[in-house]
Amino acid sequence: MGASAVDRRVRVAVIDDHDVVIEGVRAWIAADPRQRAVVSVTGDRIDTVLAGAGGEADVIVLDLELGGDVVTGRVAELSDAGHRVVVFSVHVRPLIVQAVMAAGACAFLDKRTERAQFVDTVVAAAQDRPFVTPSMAGGMLQAVRLSARERQALQHLFQGMDHASIARRLRKPGGEPVSPLTVKQYIERARAKFAAAGRPCRSNYALLARCIEDGLIRAEEISDYRSGSGGPVA
View 1 (cartoon, rainbow, N blue to C red):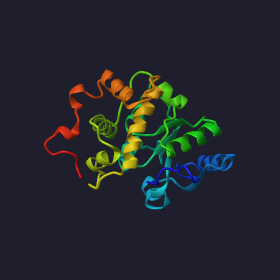
View 2: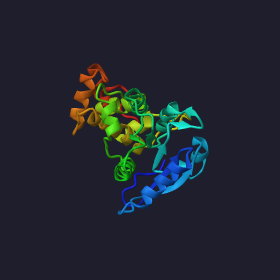
View 3: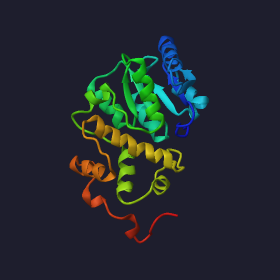
View 4: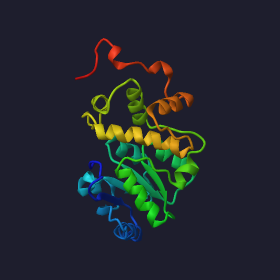
């Protein structure tokens, strides 16, 4: 996963099995007056793209249907590995949007999205800034759902840990710890979900209150981690 792109162009991997979509995305990004992003790799297979330049992309733009198969389940896998995923799909039913966001996607874009909003969303995702699209707002008004990793990151955050301490406690599928930047992504994704539901959280205290209100975090789970017998992890 690439580092946060602020002072350079955002590297975008596009995974879609329609050439017209890939070329359209490439043209949209190239036409951005501020030249904020560049398409670094394209392909129609997730694993092939990730094995190449896609593994270092700042954002993965992913179609939910590849080769006739719906790949919604891969969103959680990519997110858990620390990739920033922006779903770009014709499947925009609220339950699908909810499932994708709960799996850890940074944003959901309808394929009818206009160019400016598409590029703005991709850049915001690369910079770990919350960004609410119409599809997200329409699909998430009922309830906020957090992925398992987002909930774990928030629970540790509310216990007083910084991003580095949280990162040491969260593991990738292969067993190695995630990065502090990935932890930041989990927290900002959770914040974006509340914003999409019309309940923005401008501070960690507000975020904690929302999580407790919605039953996503229990009050008894929150205590200063330094009060334990083991103390902070070195």
